[in-house]
Length: 148
Image (cartoon, rainbow, N blue to C red; front, side):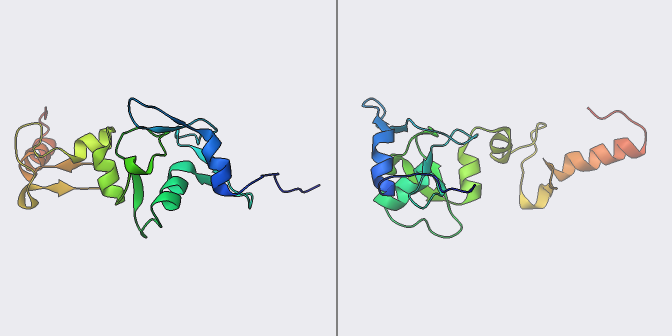
């Protein structure tokens, strides 16, 4: 037997009771279900689910421009306060984060102090390296030397 989930009220009527305002931070914390990544999850009247911070931004501010993501300026994934949300590119969103990928992307020099410039950069899908170190590493590999 197939049935549609029972969801009452408009999307915004379902949204409001699931928000708790933190007076210290100004965050509007989502108190209902979350995605595996920790973002608020909202059931819409048509039975679809959406991410609560995107719903909040679109309701209070307007459409999210194509190709952009919503970044939490407060770094709180449960926050749905539109003043804490900003549309940015995926790259900008990653660079603002604290992941290992973000930390590496912000690096301006290799671990040996060589600057990452367009003329001194080897970039693959898996890593970035300065050409100076890359050449030395390849030389060591060809000659059976240990590269540290």
